[in-house]
Image (cartoon, rainbow, N blue to C red; front, side):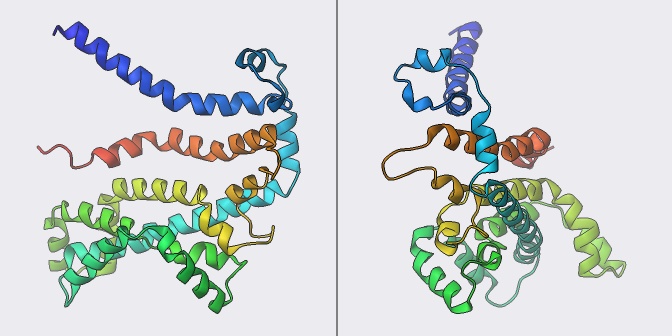
Length: 273
């Protein structure tokens, strides 16, 4: 097979994958710019329909949409900050320190990774009810401040880091706090960036537990609020797509700003000198 044909096949497959990933977003944007898009039965009619921004205006001003947006942002930022701090310390402890039961404890962390969220749904709901945290920000933030995936990710990254700088700092009398703040944290910044972006996206799009733990509009997050556009008899497609497009903006902005960091974090350690 010639190099030209091989490149043609590779680029063709990549183009198909790209179209498959971009088309849902393009369709969402197109539907959000049409007035009552459910009235059109043909794709050509949707393309030729007049463009309007009324759905965005209505979605933003109705049904406490701004409140949902702020709640989602607050929860996602708080959980992301907690994961960066706590997963860094826990992952560093598992990677650099050996204490009684550390292997068993890390095995338990890995075991939690294999437990589906639906399994802990009822026990966690009962716990939140007993603590009196239902319809509070604590129920949306505290249970997710540290995750087993984050601990595992940071631990594996720290294990691959050289220990020479840390050992030299200890010989000079540096404390663990100093080593963590001035040595480990800067070196682990790529993996922490990946963890922060992954955690933010997961919590920004989270629906199941915010839906279970909140039943008032004051603490409702954006994915839960968008679900109410789906009625029993019909779906308000225009406003639903407009709301979904607005909710996708922070995610797109996050990727555009940190795409270089994402690639660096994912490929860190892939090559050795």
